Structures are given as C-alpha cells and as structure tokens.
Image (cartoon, rainbow, N blue to C red; front, top):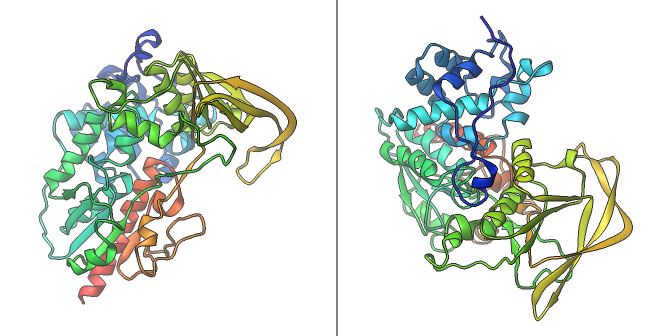
Length: 461
C-alpha cells in the first residue's frame, strides 16, 4: 500500500531564534514522521534513485525497513554503501541526485530520501550500530592524504578489506570541509566527530598537523613503507575576483571566513583568541552553498544587513533550494544580476563595492543563461566583503611531488583507475575534479579504494 500525499515537512528551529545561534536549523524526523514519509515510496522495480546515488545506496530497501520498524536493519544496509549517513542526510544535494531521479517527482514531490537517510543514520549513531569489526588483517600499509569526505570514504573502504590505513590531515582537527567549511547550523560538529570515531574504532589511524608536500612528502611516505597512497586533499585554494581593492582589510575569502568560525571559534570571541571583523553591512559574492553558508554565518555573528551579490538570476543560483529558502527566511538580501568590478576603501578599510548590472543572454555550457554586461553600475555601502566564487586544489602537493601531472587549473590528472602519473599514488574527489559535493567526493574515494585493492593484489602476485 502506498500513500501519495504531499511530502512530510521536517520540523525546523524558528527563524527569530535561529538567527542568533549556531544550533541546527533542521530538527529531523520523529519515528512517526519518518514512517509517514517512507510510506510515499512506491518501491519501483527499476529504482532510478539508486542509480543516481554516487555511492549506490540501496534506497528502497532501507526505506522498507523503516516501514517495518526494523531501524537497525535499515542502518546496516545503509552503512554498507555510505559510511557517513548522518552527514550525507544533512548536506548532500539530494534534489539533483537520488531525489531528482525519484519517479514520484514527475507528478508530485519526490520522496524525501535525504531526510530518511538522516533519520536512519542518526538512529545508528545514537545506538552505536556501526560495524567496526575487521576479520581479515593485511600487511600492506595505505596512506590517505586528507580527512575530508574522499579521504574518509577511501580509508573506510580499504580498512574494511583489512589494510593498515593511516589518514594524514594538515589541520588540527579532522573532517576536512565537513569540519571547517560547513557551519554547525547545517552540520553539527559532534556529528562529524562521531562518524570519524567509527573509523577510529575500526582501526584507521589518524595523524593531524601533517602537511603532505611540506612536513612530509609523497616520496617520504613511500620510504616509510606505504604500499599505496590516496590523495584526497580537496580544493582549499580560493578563487579571487581579480578586481581593484580586493586586498583591502575586511575582504575575506569564504573558506577562510568559515574556517575562522567553524574551526577557530571566532563566533565565541573573546572566549576564543580569533576575532573577525565584519561591521554592520556585509556583502557576499557568489551563489553557491558556500556563499549561503557565509551569508547566514555573518548574520549570526552580528552583521545587521547581509546581501548576496550574484551575476545571474535566482533560478540560476547553484545553491540547494533549501539553503536559498533558509537564507531568504533569515533576512539575507538577494542582489541578483550584479557583478562586482571594484572595491573602494578608506585608510585600507572596505567602504563600498561597485557592481555592474548584468542581463541574461543565451545558455552557456553550464545550461544556464550567460550573464552579459550592461554598462550600468551601482555602488553599495559595505563594511566587509566575503568572496565565494569557487575553489581549486592547493598546489603544495604538486609543487613538492616529482612527476605528478596536473591540469593547468591545478586538478590532479588520474587515469580510469584513479592512479596518478606517479606509481602507486591514487587521487580522487575535489583534488581531481575541483570543488564538488560531499557525496561525489565519497564516491570517488570509495571507487579509488576498489582500484587500489586491485593494484595491491596484482602487485602481491
């Protein structure tokens, strides 16, 4: 029996309360709400949602277990393919992946697969259901560079096969973009820590404050006896606007700004020693999830007026619809069809940003209408500017690894087996593709692990 009612709305923290705190906005389903939503699944014979999931989660099966009140079984089958279910249930762009492929979405709203995944993941976390037992220990050593989504998925997949796995992280806390890039009101940090603890319980070793390419090189890892290496170092180098005034005080790059708040607790100043100056009026340049995160964070740490400046229209915003709606609800102003051309300052401090009005032309390679200049300008008074127009891989590993081939824009070049131009060194996630989604990075890490396993088995013969 199916129930084709409208989608079950997830409870949320009230707007007037949440803009003053960093507590999670979306509160999660109750058991009754999860079952009500699970009832909407029509259990397709050819589940397109599974095909659209980068890690191949058996979606109809775990949903059926929810209907059967078999929540432990639902977690077990979910965890087989996704080692970070509580995280993915919160931050994955389901609308363009599993939910986007849901057959129910043709005439109605698709099943809320992400919310159900979160429900099951949180059940497993609360009841410590993650299977951390390893039955077949192998002698080969694996080094994983980066503890973000790609690195964690790669480490878990290889550790499950019995390999001796060590993850090297450049910063002083683990999780990569999950920890430093996504605000707590979207992804609580205790969720990230608990997911990583499962890998620790599994026997994955973690080393922090290790900058591969500086404190340790790829060659040194090989000399230390690592039989294969996976580079999942992400895309942490921000793209700049390249306009006059970009070097003024209180011009931030979004990843720097979010790192200061997420990892260094600038929002707790003076309790923490990392202040961040914003003032009353803040402009955020960009339209993706990171831009929305930065704008909503700025609002929470005291900015009275926060605006998004984006060169296309609202239909072209690349951020998730949920994040856009949350931002608008929280009073973020959308100044669309504007492109910054110059930042003005006084005594090295930001005072204004000059923007050109844009109009939309024909569609470009992204499928969106191309923004075109109009020659008309407007100046906005601001106290701080946050730039969020994309990120690319940091060149440290490339610059310090002999023979490692990269694209002109910095992405590591790999073959169909995820192997780089250096023997025994594999790579995946944002370090290869540039900034993408958590689940795509996880899928790459997981797929690369399969290829590394095949490589090591072949090498052992």
